[in-house]
Image (cartoon, rainbow, N blue to C red; front, side, top):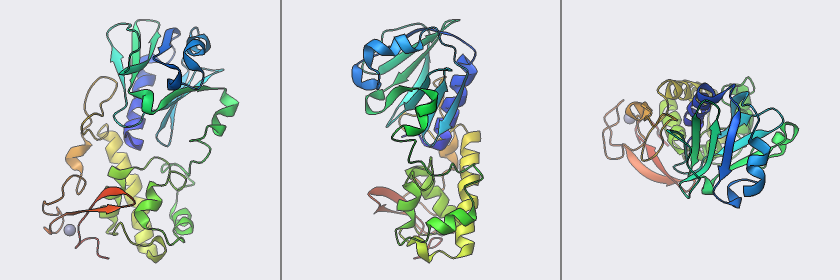
Length: 271
Ligand SMILES: [Zn+2]
């Protein structure tokens, strides 16, 4: 699933390609791709101009003035520029053509969605209403983390919880906890203030560098130009189970935490 860096790149690409342009055609593959359904989707979008794009957690928002597109790309979802209009199908589940021949396909959305909301109701969207602070916002601070880490829950599970921090997923949580020297199964309330500060700094640092590298590409994430991200080359533990830790040489282990495959250096992240 695209996490904060990948969604940031997608959002910026869509803005670069289509901001200021009017929608001339828009269709979805079937009713469950959008809250408004197949009939209403083009009626709401055609003739409107894309004013800008944004990101809320792992969700891309498209500002069409009176209408906001709320796009959630789930596993292997991407936005792709197509050479010309094509009807949506089960892969390209939403296709939007802007003036000037810019055609964007939102792929594999049947696991996600392309909802249309009135601007004043976006905050009510079920995934947006529960989002915690964005890692790059002022609300995200060591003090905030100290508060939410009062719980006894495993630190990894807490960081994956979108109502605690918006935008982190499995890849970046593993990298953040490695950089901070914190074992993923540690109870959050056992972290001392140095460790809390380290989690805070590593979150901003790693996400920032991942955005600069245009995200992480495994099997399927690509940007709107079909290009791969480059951050996978900077990953220290994720996907590196069985290899030596880049910091100390100890073998990186893979375990299951919060139901997710989790990568850890037992020496750098002691329990
Ligand atoms: Zn190590």
